[in-house]
Image 1: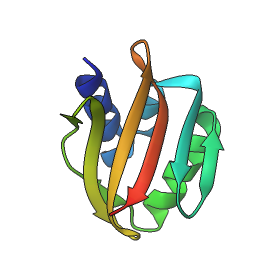
Image 2 (image 1 turned 90 degrees about the horizontal axis):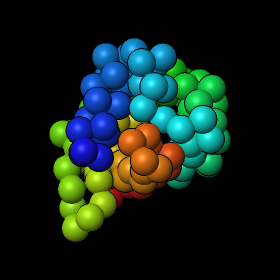
Image 3 (image 1 turned 45 degrees about the vertical axis):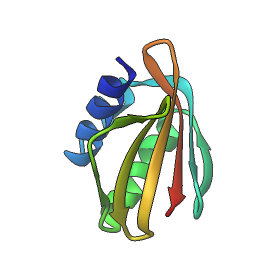
Image 4 (image 1 turned 90 degrees about the vertical axis):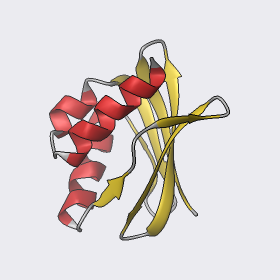
Length: 100
């Protein structure tokens, strides 16, 4: 089920439905990025996603389970990256972007 939730989040972000993407996050979710640091809470994450989108965004692959961790691979302004997801129940509570 976590893979499906992550994929729905990715689909919403890729289609620039940032409000829709927030439905899949806990209120205190965190997004860690190598350039912008850690953003906590839906509003800060949404603002970060909008800013990334204005800068050209990026592309993410399908979400998949890699040895128990839900991930998606992608590319964007930062080059190649991996987005990892953590969950609390049926919501995403943690995401980490790492360059690869």
